[in-house]
Structure formats: C-alpha cells, structure tokens
Length: 212
Ligand code: 2DT
Ligand code: MG
Image (cartoon, rainbow, N blue to C red):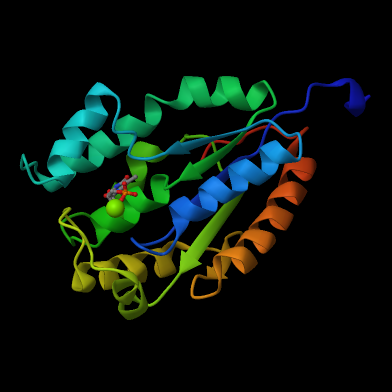
C-alpha cells in the first residue's frame, strides 16, 4: 500500500554560528543527492531575494537600523513567505537542504538578551519541522581563525560565543551534532549517510508543525 503513495522529500537543515561550514556542506549534499539520482534543492535563510529579504539584507549590511523585536519578526516572516513553495517541493518528492532556519532566528535574537527564548520561538511555531537538523559546532576561537569575520552585523567573536551558547541550550537529542573542526570530506560523508537514511525513513510520514 505504502509503495503506491507518493514519496515526499526530506527537510534537512544546517545550523550553527558563522564560519562553521554550513554553506559548503549544503552545496556538497545537494550535489551528492542529485548525482545519486534524487531530487534535491537548496534554500538559505535569510532569503535575501524577496522584498522582506532585501530589508533584512540592508539591516545585516548596517545600511539601516531596526528594533530587535522588529527584525526578529522580519526573519520569521521571511521563512513563512517561503513555506508554500517549500511544501510544494517536499510533496513533489524534492528534498530541501536548508542553510539556517528558525533555530538561527531564536539563537541570534536571544543572544541580544532583549527578548526571552519563548518569545523568540513564537513567530516560527507551526513552520514545517525539519526531518534532520545538523548542528555544526566549532569553538568561536576556531571559527575566527578560519578567516577574518566580515563586516556584517553579528560577525564579532564575543557575540558568536553567545550565539553558540544559545544554540547549545536549545538543541535536543534529535539534533545531529557535528564537530565542525573535522575535514569537509569526512563531515560530508557522515551528512550524506544520515540524509539518505532520513529521506528513506520519512518519505511516507506527515510533516509536523514545529514547536507545537
Ligand atoms: P548568513 O550569514 O547565513 O547569510 O546569515 N540570522 C539568520 C538571524 O539573526 N535570524 C535568522 O532568523 C536567520 C535565518 C545569522 C546572516 C545573519 O543572519 C542571522 C547571520
Ligand atoms: Mg554570514
């Protein structure tokens, strides 16, 4: 019976501080899945291409200032505006490989200490729940040594250390924590194996609402 039902794609999320290798691993994973004949697409948040995303981009580039709660809600809105497209792709059997998601939203705002974690989670309640969250963990010192942080907002060692603490407090046993000091190839092999398993295991399961 199950075999006759359409198989959905998996929602696979990468989280972590800046410079831990999320984007590299996203790219490698999408390529590997496609090469193996599976449908896969990448997506990153913030999605700077939309009207809301352009506002967020101006904030990150320090062209504009926004109040902390206000920018938090824009990041969440920037996820919600992508949900119809995400659901359509997942239902059609395409796996989505996502660079940052609601967990970044919570960690970065909570690190500012102007809003409680529960408040930070609220606007993202009900988003599609990821099938896998890969948490790339690296000490802020090691991240900083990889290359100089750029000029964007948040790219400061002290703030990154607080973001890392927020992620550590938020993560649960369902997350796949990865020591991001390992080589790109060795991380990729582990990520691919876990992702292939998740694609198989979740293909006939419903997508549940996040944090409900
Ligand atoms: P990138 O460097 O990955 O483009 O991220 N951020 C991101 C938030 O503060 N809230 C969010 O909801 C998301 C998705 C993390 C740009 C910066 O935006 C931060 C770094
Ligand atoms: Mg960045």
